[in-house]
Image 1: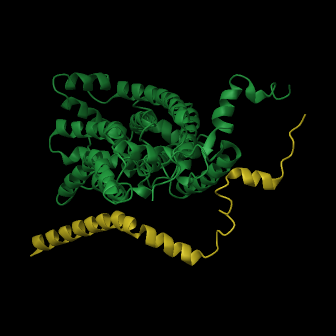
Image 2 (image 1 turned 135 degrees about the horizontal axis):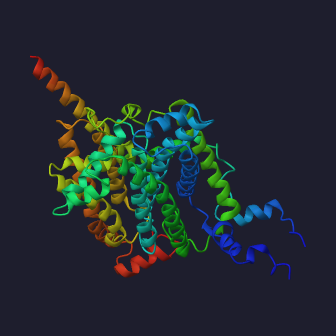
Image 3 (image 1 turned 45 degrees about the horizontal axis):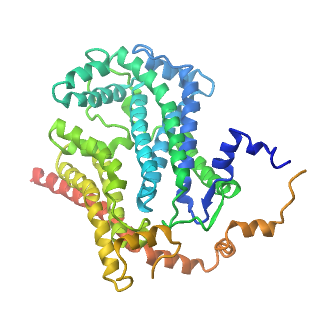
Length: 406
Length: 72
């Protein structure tokens, strides 16, 4: 009787219990799996600090910059709120990028978790939009010119491009209407991200988490509470230390000094550089001399990410057992870091050529993915280990068995 | 009807039958463990670092050559 009346068995509470307390987790997941919960923590920090910042911020071109200075100087703890929010965005992207690369390394995108991956890409897209429009709000030089350059990209779309840009701006230049709508959307989008995160989690819990071996872990699972809580807590403390170093010792190191100059439409900065987390995509955009081609390349980045689970033909998930993919993965990471570096360099030799080669390298990873799985399957079949096995049987062994064929 | 206290040993056992000795020798044979990690991962580390360092050095050298070219 007492068990039946348990609060954890009541509606709503039972949902929390099933997903946050009793949720069966693979026993062998490593600290790399903590970046999901860390991303949730980052989102929470961003929403809380953002709500309090919005109480003191004024979305008007004459007052926006001054209201940010007012927050920094006059509002009690305002400097902390603002530095937490500004650096929190960077932390959010660090955590999410590590989360994505973990998924790539361990094949977390592959069947049956395609939906989890696609929802993750949607969240990344929403994050990028939110971060971009949030960077416009302080109304500094980089805010204004960054907004001008990036929104102008829509003008590359044939026929309707200019109309879209005017519609985005709410006028014929980046002005008060633009700032107002960006503020409104910057407040709205995090809640849409939160909803997408809940769906992302629901989709994940349908089949359960992947694990470093990439095999079915049904036989060896443990409850989320207390084991994963403790494991995640270790990462949260480490993250808090890392985050605090930026907030208290280097709060402006990830920003651009020009954003401490009020926006001036009559004076263009020498170099317009986006925030560091946009640099790899920005480098791909710049590596194509044609404006429409650059915009199409950015679109192709996200199409490639969306398509990844569907073009993957590998029977093995984890790169620990995929020696060729493992090397390609590290090359992709090196490529992305190089693109990030190129994104903040001036458009001149040799950076242009390096950027173009790195952009080709980025897409090469996705282009070779369908072939790679077939190649790996052939290597396994030719290795005298399991020559009698058909590809379908191999797939079954690697995805459903707890033992790896030796 | 409160919860029946569970003995620590039983709790430890429920973690996983495969991971019973994870923490017991964390610092034991650390030089061996580090060298094993290095031997297992040096190719991956090489694949990550060499393209970055190589490209950076190439770019720096290119700029230096260009500067010298304009100088003389």
